[in-house]
Image (tube, rainbow, N blue to C red; front, side, top):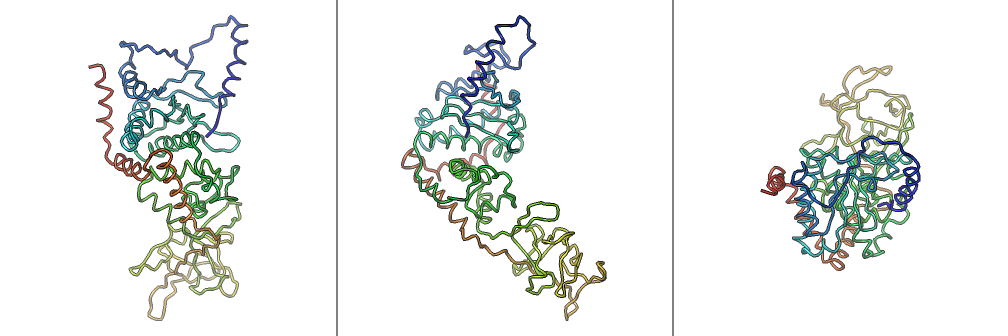
Length: 419
């Protein structure tokens, strides 16, 4: 959530003297002339009429897909939204946001609490100071801006969900807590673990490291207000598999080391290169290099994915000698001589020996899974007590609609306007 109102006003004022002191004619602008009157002969008439009937009249919400200069943040180089993608996003926003809250909490809720303006922007808003990307802004409970609309892939719901719909639920949560504060108990759950400056560089596997600290996403670990909005929005929009994955990663231990190239590495599994519990042979591995046997015992997969705190993917044997390429592509030990594999290591029965894998001990004294669930419970109670919103019912309805919507049928709503 960021506020840009002052910057916009200052930018507008600064431009006035330049316009009055020059007779030079400027070329065509990307900013169209926008009026409240609908032109039946205009190419955009059916879409504009649909927006009027589905946003402006029932909710007093202006859904802006055209980019007027006053709507553009002068800190970024921005372009307008693609017309067809704007139509699809308007349809999905109505179906997966407005209609959901109407059904669960009643039609008056969004009439009273929805932003007055939904502004689409075609391009990204990249932050040069942090390298992060702003995907949405909620400005004072009045306006929500969605960026990067032109990269929307309507054939991939996950792309739409990650790029826009999750952002809408996130920004709407900001609007609600701007109007009524959520309990301060939420902020105390992760005191000392927020990182406003370096949240985007918290290296991990699928967000697992920050999950283990009690955050649903890396962005949630930047600030307690963002944490609250991310907790609510991800609980609503994540599928059951995605949500369970977050809770699974939140319960893991993680090991960190910096490799010879200066890269920060995090791993949640390790193995002993000679299958003997000896620290000199411990190597860390990601879970994508692991397979399980019929009993559920975990073994290593490709040695090429197995990494250690030593240079050049090497480990050391019990005598302190450097060993390389100790595993084959299936995760079995191989004999080596002078750093070169010479044959397979066999057990007494003549069978190749797999390397057993162990989970990294969870030593941060934080039960990330429990912290995340506590945060959801706080949000759940606040939404019901202060807003009459059943969070679980909203999630259930959104999940059903995400699985069952038909975009072609939704598009017919616009095609049939004015007929």
